[in-house]
Length: 440
Image (cartoon, rainbow, N blue to C red; front, top):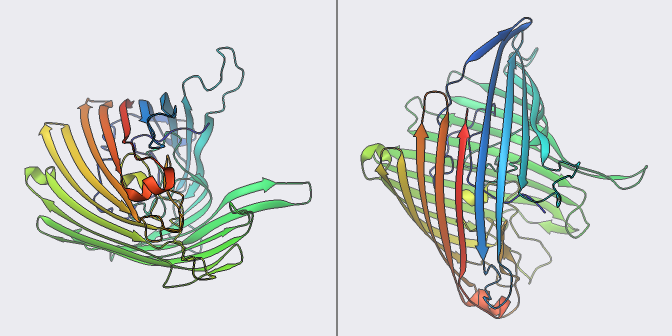
């Protein structure tokens, strides 16, 4: 079984990120932890940091039928230990060990295996690339761009997400940050002579004004996969842009992307395969800690009346940040709207209340997410999928050397006619979690 999704936490040693537009609080302890710098012979600096994160989750009636035994409760945890080593001549080695698991997954207390243990990150970084300038990073690393709608580190999940490959990035004095990356996302050897592979790469450029009131992103992302769910090939180019503008206490943002290529011998038509995002955030005081956020996300679905495949592929996202904590949808074949209100109840204690509306763009196409399905699609099904209400409370305990937090969350999904058409039932679904963790 795969590790379950949890509240996002800060990642140590990741790439410099472009500015992010607002979303529900994903990292209760994002403030950098003050840790000692150790010195050893032959090493300029050695910085050791780590994290322990624990969570209980309960998901109930995710099949929208309370008479079926589909409920489950699970305990999960994540342990990370990071070694950030600065060598001579602008060389850096970063290694992040991780163990992510749910309790009892080894089925016995004397098991010799540890399936959750992994090297989550491990890369070599050149601080001044010969002939190119900028920085180069080779190895396993996290990639997160924009607000992670298309490429994210998935820190909401206990296991997170990392990529194996190469990254070259530049930061200029005029506000531009430019990334070029190439990664391998799949290598499956089927016989001694054959294998199936997947590749993902692209260019992501960001410009931010000196006062950080305006951010503009431009990107081109390429995915080639030799093994789709239909056992075919996918060859897809994503072109898009994103803009954020702050006007005092008001922030406006938008993102637009389209795709072109081929999937399972069907054309992916440019213009007809798209994603659109828009948001407005109003600060209501308390240095922006009290706010009101409205957001809209649209993504095309597959039209059954054509020979093309118009379903937008949201690539490698952190969907949990945008489409509700119950994880019922990706930004694919979706019309989604949300309103969130956040407030600081006391110092280092905050509450977020959100409402999410879901509707399919094509009633014959599926709508599903990391943890559930809203509709399997079908002729005559309703587009109306339902509403979700989320409540999240967070308390951070800042200390001199350690950052600790606890977080409680509850989600309620109220199914619409489209869910009933697909499942022949429309009982309420519930999600609850309790999480705590420390970073040192």
